[in-house]
Image (cartoon, rainbow, N blue to C red; front, top):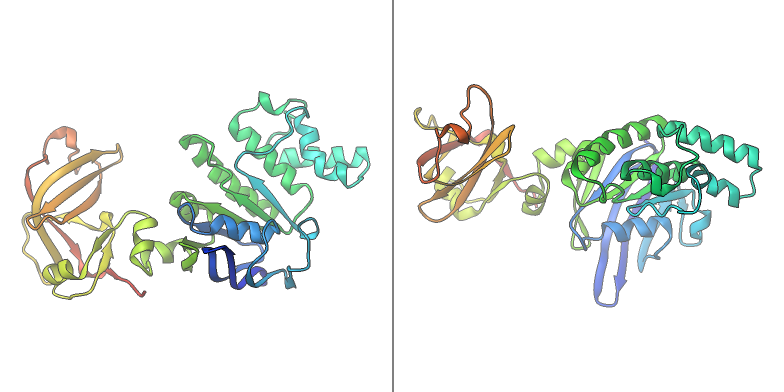
Length: 342
């Protein structure tokens, strides 16, 4: 796959602060690439470097094979969608979408025709005469997407575009945004701190931490084979077993992670040698409808948690089968252990 955007040893410093610290990665042409990390991890600064809003302290950034240091932002074939939408309140939806072509001097008939086509793409074809204040949050976000796409950028940058939406609408927009990316076929680079967004939408993602990239890979690779304890803990839920506890549980003094859905209650059958077994007391229960999270505290004070799907075969906390204070044994397969490569 051809490269749409590439970073080679890129740094961006603000005095003593290393916002981006020797970062290298490549984004394939037509790929949905997510940059995931907590606040201050460098992901938004990296996005701004691609857009040209910031200049790298050192290193090289290329967009479709062209070095960017001498290309001003307005000449880069990229566009950006922000979390706050940045729509013009005094303009209709149609004029908001058409604005990019209007300032380029495209004739009125042509830019209105193109704007109507883009509104159809984002499923707002009947709302062109409205103003942004008359739309829902999800509709305003789709207007912002249409306005960004009308100039036919080769790369679309999205800076936490769904962050202002409520949970249910955000999940709906995740599906729609991924479908839109497939439809238009251009490169999407998506910044988020939401692990569910990154896992469900991206073809590949980069996990940022303190200005560096901890791991790059497909959602499945990063979730199943985290390279570090940070990745295991930040991308999904994980029990981080330190070397001392690991030596007691499975005889190998090496830290690792185990996902909570891979742990099960193990009250009756003996250990067959392929399991890690722990005993303690239930100290916390959280019911989530489809699943329940249980916390087991060991005699030495360490806590582990497991998640079980609720079904007719598994009693939920409302049935009282498992209660806080109850002694329990849990187990997980040694095949599900993930040792860290870094």
